[in-house]
Length: 271
Image 1 (cartoon, rainbow, N blue to C red):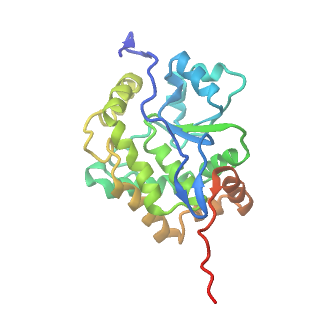
Image 2 (image 1 turned 135 degrees about the vertical axis):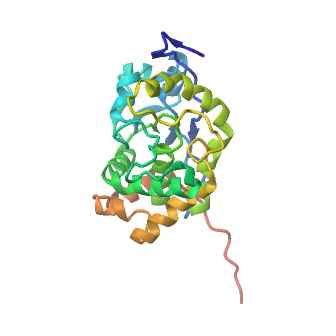
């Protein structure tokens, strides 16, 4: 797909949409049809927007920066009165960190440095992460949160959500790494959607290539580093959010919405 006049993105089907259902958590598994994570839904074709709504989508949470959101708008889902929209930016500008940014480690240092950038993002945006958790806990129907690629800001949000409801680290890492299967199609879509925006920025961002790099990959070590860094700095993954107002009642509501309890195996009877 191309762009119109190299400035207006043409609608393209989602390439990194997935349901967070069916994942093992403490006490059971996550329910299908409750929370979805995705790449940018503002540029979906009308028929895909209709399909998402018919499948139960009622809440969209946009994690993109104000510049990104203004570039594409809300798209066809924004025209549906039955779908509520929340813009909660996780970054002040386009997400890819520039080498030399204070909290954003240089991407040339690899997956661990990118994981530390993820941890810094959680720390700096703990209030926004908490707000997203509160919205999900009170929503009806399916909630979808997204950024541009559905990998970095969305991956961070998914990790915190899964941690809050009792998922083990390896479950969180495995969900993050699933984006690897979508990288080729995702790269093509990002080139269409974000390429013109990146080209117009006065401070050039890294190009949308280098799919083996930390920035364009979804490496297990990146997510493991984020989780480890947060525990080392704060004692737990959720502590920055607790400090920002996350309470136990919200966590319990999240578990009530997302958890399908599984009965324990039969107890052995002796004597």
